[in-house]
Image 1 (cartoon, rainbow, N blue to C red):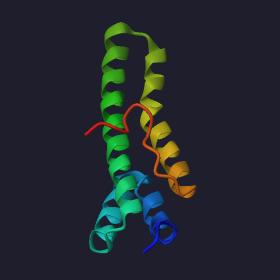
Image 2 (spheres, rainbow, N blue to C red; image 1 turned 135 degrees about the vertical axis):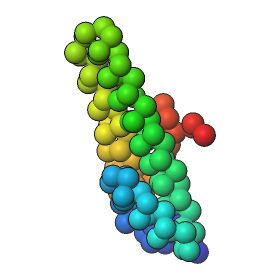
Image 3 (tube, helix red, strand yellow; image 1 turned 90 degrees about the horizontal axis):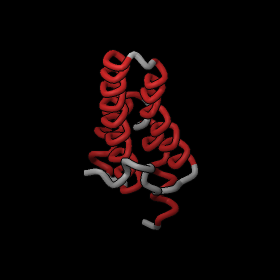
Image 4 (cartoon, rainbow, N blue to C red; image 1 turned 180 degrees about the vertical axis):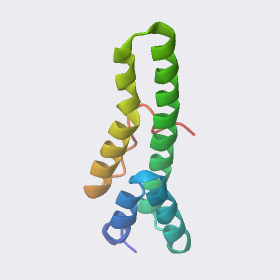
Length: 105
């Protein structure tokens, strides 16, 4: 199978993988039998984005409570930003790693 058809075939599941944890699970099990490399790449990036979002939110919450600086809470949106970047990459058929977290793991 050529790369273009692999991307076209896996684009929907790649996009779904970024939409909540449930979408990630659905995309994972849907792609398990197919083995589409494009979808597999985006599932991996989605896992990284979800974990990074959770970790950053926890750290931001702790910092806000310790320091009292409410502006730190805006870092909680980092996970959402990573997810949006991932969806845009998937929609455009790109396999670019997410900034800052794409190489983790």
